[in-house]
Amino acid sequence: MKSLTFAAGAMLVSYLPFSAVNGALGAIAAATGAGTLQLQWVSDAFAVALAAVVLPAGVLADRVGHRLVTLLGLAGTVLGAAAGTVAGQLDGAAAVVTLWVAQAVAGVGAGAVMSASLALIAAQAPDPRRRARWISLWAAATVGGLGGGPFLTGAVTAVAGWWWLYPPIALLAVAAAAAGFGVAESRAPERRRPDAAGLDTAAHAAAAPERYGPDASGLDAAGRLNTAGLDAAGLDAAGLDAAGRLNTARLTTAGLDVAGLDVAGRLKTAGLDTAGRLNTAGLDAPGLTTVAPERHRPDGTGPATSAPERRGLDGTRHGAAAIGVAALVFAVIGGGTAGWASPATLAAAAVAVLAFAALAAIERRAESPLLPLSLFASRGFAAAALAATVVLFAIGGGLFFLSLTLSHAHVGQLGIALRLGGLFGGNALGSVAAGWLQRRLDGRTVLLAGLVVAAAGAASLLTVGGASGAELTWRLAVLGLGAGLVMATSSAVAVQSVPAQFAGLAGAASNAVRQIGAALGPAVLGGVLAARSTTGLAGAVHAFAAVLTAALALTALVAAALIHLRRAPRAA
Image 1 (spheres, one colour):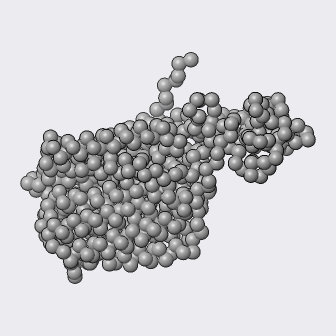
Image 2 (tube, helix red, strand yellow):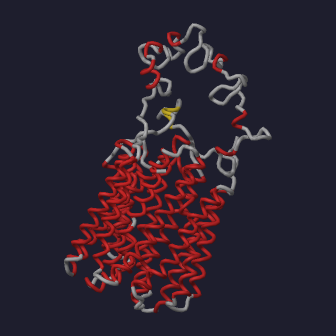
Image 3 (cartoon, one colour):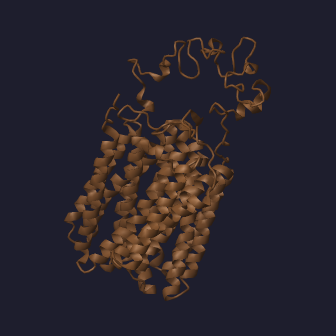
């Protein structure tokens, strides 16, 4: 439980720089003279930095320790808060640029916390049900960070300048870090090298090198079974005799071996349901394996390893991914302000395309990809990643859009916080309800239900007539309820949709993909705000609602198709 408390507290605090500053956008604009374009980068400096760091931070955490990298991430939050405090002492453009730097540093810290803290609780909760419950609570803490920021801003700006929101964040980060010093460290296991047969032998070679001959592979020079590795009964350590038959000495009293096969080579009953059918607990909804559990050698002759365990840091790939995300966001922001045909927008789009193309080319040749495309062969993983991406697009973009729109309508900081409180109150309720629902329903069902509820909440905003607190709050609460269901279940669904040895990689990949949605939210919806700035509050909110309703409804349909539609049968 200490691990969960530490991980959840770190996640809550690390998101406060994003949500609190978004709640203060009106005050920042008034104090610095920043326009919509500059304010978009106040939000996106954090989101882009987080998206760029979340994968390499996961790799680093696997190598040096999940707890340690979580602590380093909290240190980034403190440094970002310090820079934000400095920004408050400056004027005009200098203040805005310094604020961008502060948010970027805080975003780097949040990315480290996100990857490392999720891996920490996954490592310390091996039971699937317990892990799902812990991940739901971890996601609820993220919601707490998103929802608590505007209230912190409202309380601070009522008595002081906007920049005073940063010192409390720094103090909370220090307190969260202090909670981590009693938590056990965890790391990913060492990568093990394959032998000539494509099987991992590092453990065997270390334990009994003399039984495997000079190559430690268990094979002789001709590729036959190495008889030096057989025991007196002619049975090797892998449980096969010299002819490759099952080692009956390794069978349990039930006649089942550890690989799950009986003596006739049939499936072990633990892999069957009570009717003797294949156990769908390890399959996706159409009854297809969720992801290929093994990588293969380039010549296609056999598996290379049983799992991608500890990955290496690669500055080229991580740099290409970061440049691609940043250029994409720059292009979207530029398209909404300067126009899609402007030279700067086109140049940014070209850089994004080139960066992502380079990343794809490098990934195809990489022994251990950052984001293996094989993960998306799992329909559950693909649906979870898509749903989380769109929901974070809605939440991140909505926080930016509504805060600035309500500020333009002369709603005070506390009033903005109360209205946004409906969104995040519903989000928190959805996160808590998701844990209860997942104990009674399949996680994918909860995920789809969340998308439908969120789409209904977004559609209800199409009937808003003004800035009334009650009129906005309950509609935002419905949107938040659906978003909370998705956010709390998407990580668990992603992790549980792949074999256990891919769980850490799936969690990191899901987090990385959905952060693109958080980065694009302010970029896209900032463009909507700029286009609707003269239509009044109701017109702006209606445009916002139309975009979100379409995005969420389409995502619900695609996710349902991924989860429930069968693949077409292959030709014989």
